Image (cartoon, rainbow, N blue to C red; front, side):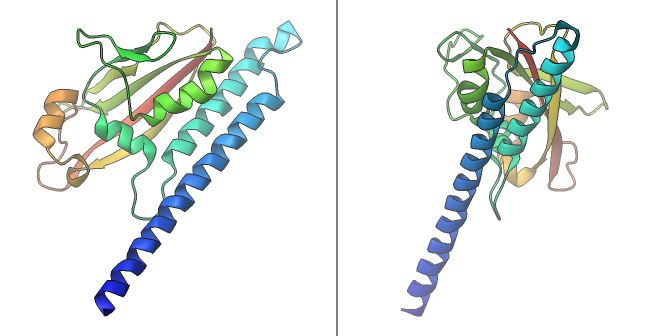
Length: 204
């Protein structure tokens, strides 16, 4: 009976952590939406147009990454899960959903990046690319597209967030490396690699 009560207590505690994380993420997304709605992305004077738009896109992009990077105790962030779940496929927004650019023509699902773009960026006419960047065994920086929607404009902004991956995070490291190209940077420890999630935003 004691062990049963202890297990129920632990389960309730874990559920509370999950609920707190969800509520915090919703509040932060609400703040982003409020900030975007409160200030128009179209400035009134042409002399400050580019700087005005770039500053707002920079803030919006960083806020989105901060929301996705939030994590409660003992849980991975939504952004880290996107990296962990990636299989190397590139996706593009086709007007209604994110579709792969390869022959499989699959839909991007269970992606927090895709969800937040659909909720915040797309309705406001903000184009976006996402690249995952890492260092290979030769010390060379490699970058591959996760979401690609064309070449950005001259006034595009770039924001980024680094994600630390460990062997336990990945699970099957051999399969992950084959699918994504991201290598295990240290075979003698649980450290796997650091992935820089780079988000590019611009007005369409």
